[in-house]
Image 1 (tube, rainbow, N blue to C red):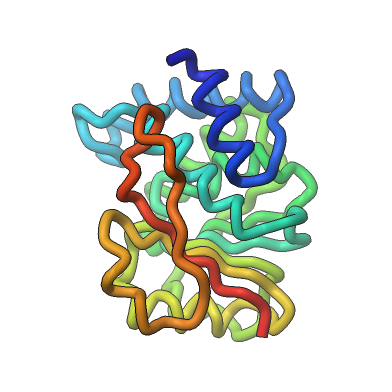
Image 2: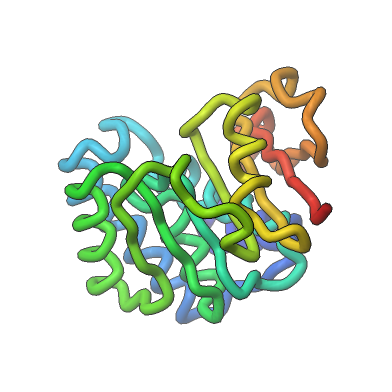
Length: 201
């Protein structure tokens, strides 16, 4: 299946649209991940970049009916899901927080290469972020649900939305407040990959 068709299916499910210029930016992010990002250890050597990282990151957009004015990616590492979301939501001020100075430097580099102007980086501890600081929040493969979901809720404004990347097993979040859902297209993404949407208070 062509990447445009895959992208259209994920975006139809998420409720958003991607322009041709945004598709070009996403392609350049994917190319960077497959080369410099992989060489830096940001992704695994055999991972399918487009399906495993670009489309998977864009799944997080389902939580936001409109782009949030400010969005934090907690523990975003090499820029996932923050980079694809910055492309999708160009009017959102996106902050990527991670402890690794080296990875934040790499994220700034790919932003310059791709032309992403709405993403900034912050080196630091994600648990030190001030409460109620952002209109939206995301976290992918950083903390377990019992600590990650409450942290996302804490740093997100009361009227904001946060999305937690569950992974392959929704069982661990069944007692958490919010909606757990997954993209159904097995020919595009692993159908077992879940996200947990934390709604406004």
